[in-house]
Length: 351
Length: 282
Image (tube, rainbow over all chains, first blue to last red):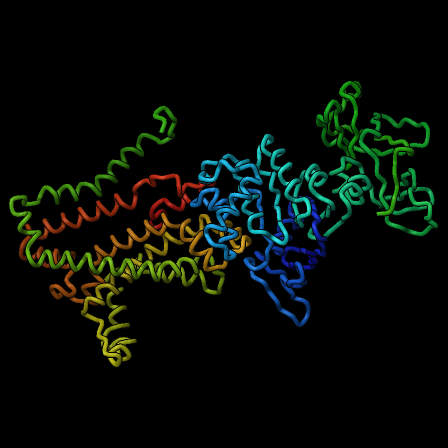
C-alpha cells in the first residue's frame, strides 16, 4: 500500500503534498490552525479540496487535476478516522460499536461480532463487551474507539490527537497500545506531543500556515530542526538567516558565529539556521566580553520553571539558568538582559 | 437536586411565576368545577361524542404518521443540507406555527378545493379532497408538521454530525448511517416531536372547519363537536372538553417523561440536550 496526496483548499490557505509508504507511520505536527485537521478531513473525504489528487493502494480518493473530477465518498475510501474524542455511538454497546465497521462492509452479524471480540481483546478491553459508552472511562472509551477503527480494516488509519483528551494516567497505556498496533500499519497521526512522534512515528511532517515547513525521519528532525516549530519541539533555540563566510547573517544584520557543518560551502547566499540549546545560553545584566561569543540584547518576556532550572524567555530565545543565578540577577519580565552563547555551542547548517 | 444549593432567583420572580401558573391552571380548574358529574358519562358516550372522538383519534394518528414520513426528511435536509434559500425554506415551513389556523384552512381550500390550484387535476383523477376525512388529515398535517420539524431539527443540530462522519469513515453508506446512527441518536427528539404533532392535530379546529367542514362521522372532530354543543348543550361541551384535557395531559406526560435508561445519554450530553422534548417549539 502506498498513499500519495496533494491537495489545496484555497479558503483555508491549505496546500500540502504528502506520501506515506507501506507500513509507515507519519506524525503531523504544527501550531494550532496550521491545517492539521484539514489534512485529515480531506484525506477522509469529509472536506472537498479545490484541486489536487490522492491515491491509496492504487485507488483514486479524489482527482481534481485539470480536466478530471473524480471523488470517492468517505465510506468507500478505507481511511478510518480516530478523533480526539472517542465518539462511540451512544446507543450501541462496546461490542456493537466495534462490530459497526465490519457490518457496514458486508460481514454477517456473527462474523462482525467475532471480529469485534478479537479487536477488543487486542486493545485489552475484552471485559467491556456489554458496556455502553456512558459506562466507560475516558481511557477505556478511547481504547474501544481504537478497536473500532482497526476493525474496519483501514488501508490508512487517521488519528487526530488521540491522546489529547485523556488524563495523564490513561495516555501512556494508549500510547503503548498504539505503538503495538501501528507497527507495519500505515497511519497518519496528528499530535502535539513530541513523545508520540518519537515513539509512534517513522517520519514527522511539520505543518505551518497550511504548508509543510519541514519533514524527515523523526530523529533527524528533532536533532537538526530546520523550522522554528521543530526547534521548539526539540527544545532548541533556532535563528534563521543566510550563510556567509563568517557564519550566519540574520535578517537584521547580526552575524552569528558558530560551527558551520557544511564544509562544501563555497560562498554566496544560502538559507541556513543557527541552532543551540537553552542550556548553552548565559544571562548577563551588562555586556561582558570574552572568548568568541554571540551576544543578544533582549528583554525578558517570561520566566517559567523547567525541571530544576528556570527557563528565561526573551526575544524569541530561551535560556536555562539555575534558580540561584536567576535570584542573584534579579530577573523579572520586562528586564533588559544580554543572552550570551559561545560560538562552540552553536551549530549552523542549511535550512 | 441539592436543596441547599444557591439558586440566585430573586423573590419577586416567584410571585410572577405563580401568577403565570395561575393563568394556565385557573381556567382549567374553573372548567372542571363546571362539570355536571351526574350526566358526565352519558354525555361523553353519546353517539355523536363517540363518533367525534373516534374520528379525532383516527385522523390525528394518520396525520402524525404523515408528519413523521414527510417531516423527518425535511428536518434532515434543513439541518444537514447546504443549499440556496435554505433559511427562507425554514421560515416558510414554520409559518403554520404563527398563522391563524383559519387562514391555513383557506389556503388549503384554494390548493385542494374544487376551484383550487390542484382541484382540477385531482377531480380529473376522480379525487375530491375538500370536505372529506382526507381534508381533516391534510389540515391537521398542515398545522402539526412544523412541530415535528422544529423539535427534530433541533435534535439533529445539537449532535450527530461528528458521529455520522466517523460512521462514514468506518465504511457505512449514507443509507446505513441514516438508519443506524442518525435516527437512533435523534429518537428522543423524534418521539417528542411526534407527540407534539399528535397533540396539535387533536386540537386542530380552525383549518379543519374551513377546509373540511363539520359533517358528523366524516369531518366533525372532537373540537368541532365541542364548539357545536356549546350552543345547544353547555354540559356536553364541558364534559367533552374534559375528555380532551385528559388526552392532552396524557400526551404531555408522555412527551416530558424522563428517559429511563442510560441508553440515550451520551458522555458528551449532546443527545440529552437534544432529547429535551420540544425544546425549540416555543
